[in-house]
Amino acid sequence: MKHQFTDIESLLDEKMEGKTVKIRGWVYRKRTAGGMNFLIVRDATDVIQVAVKKDKVAEKDFASADKALIESAVEVEGIVKKDARAINGFEMQAVSFHVIHSANAFPVAKDNSPEFLLDIRHLWVRSREISAIMKVKSTMLEAVREHFKQEGYFETTPPIIVSGAVEGGSTLFEMNYFGKKAYLSQSAQLYLEALIFSLEKVYSITPSFRAEKSRTLRHLAEYWHVEAEAAYAELEDMLILEEGLISNMCQKAATDRAKELKFLGRDPAEMKKIEPPFDRIKYDEAVELVQVKNPAFKWGDDLGTEDERILTQERTLPVFVTHYPKHIKAFYMKEDPKNPKLVRCNDCLAPEGYGEIVGGSQREENVDKLIDRLKEEGADVAAYEWYLDLRRYGSVPHSGFGLGLERIVRWVCKLEHIRDTIPFPRVMNRSYP
Ligand code: ATP
Ligand code: MG
Image 1: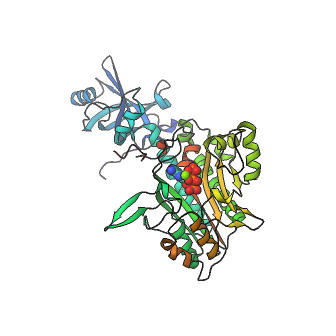
Image 2: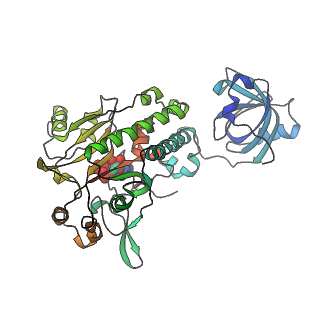
């Protein structure tokens, strides 16, 4: 690079007072007053007010600043001054102002409808809100990789095009695979299970696809799935791995992204407090707690969004719900030896009403039980032959889980809707842009 540009973030510091620096970025806001242009310029790191005065810059530079519309790409050289009136408390007094690209009239304005902002998502991703969320998400993904490395897990790359369902046929996206039916993966789990017989502890970060036919605040048709599987691990081992992972993700966001969290309305101190151990309650106990506020709830019902809200509204830490009834859970979950009506599974529910962020279980090792469960569900057993083989050649106890990355980001960033946790959300009525 020919020129030395300074990050805007590093200008917001008393030590920079009086220094002449160069920045480059995009015009974020603009106002004109008596021979002056005040432009808020943003780069990847932050925003700063730039004052372009008629008598301080060349005539053509002043004319450029005068003409520059919002989202024009600009380079500015100027002197940093403290100014309590300016956004972020600093101002740059321009000595030169150069437009790299002069933007057309930008379609985003105040009070745009959410639908309109989704139509122009390719431009709206530049907003400070979405930028802050993407930074938090990037940091949380870093924490995922750090945590698994520390725990001795291998990152693996399972397939996205698959031949069978993991989480039930109703949410499968079907595709034409050279004239045959194939599907987009709902979960990497079955493939991760295959990999533990050589690598023992594995994880993956992949997109998962679910044709969710109802509109909710927490379902996407395409989301990023953090999944782990470990040989010899029992349910209790997974709870420890999950709470450690979740805690590290929250801690790292609180430390490295405090500024962004505050901007989004989340006090980083709340995320600093997310530490193990999380409470563990059994489904039976959860039923009683839910019934206090939702008397219609019966043993055997699956916990819906509202029920999870009842269980988590008053909490500040996540909570594990374990030992759900077998008939509401997937075929691969291990039966509880103490009560064959239950399975050795866990959901981890985020506090403050957010609800499920992780689903996990110990896996059934008995091939005959697996076949019976598949038949009960009306599945095509032949499509699972390869999976059943895993129980025929050196099967060992094992467990795993899946964490919805956007679910945990939604909670940590304190967002209403999951769609803002992903730059280009895919939901039932939208695949553009
Ligand atoms: P829910 O009951 O909320 O639909 P689920 O039981 O179908 O969740 P799992 O099949 O256990 O979820 O998937 C593992 C994790 O993946 C969930 O705990 C959640 O964090 C995430 N997840 C599942 N479906 C979606 C979705 N449509 N959009 C975003 N994340 C999802
Ligand atoms: Mg679901």
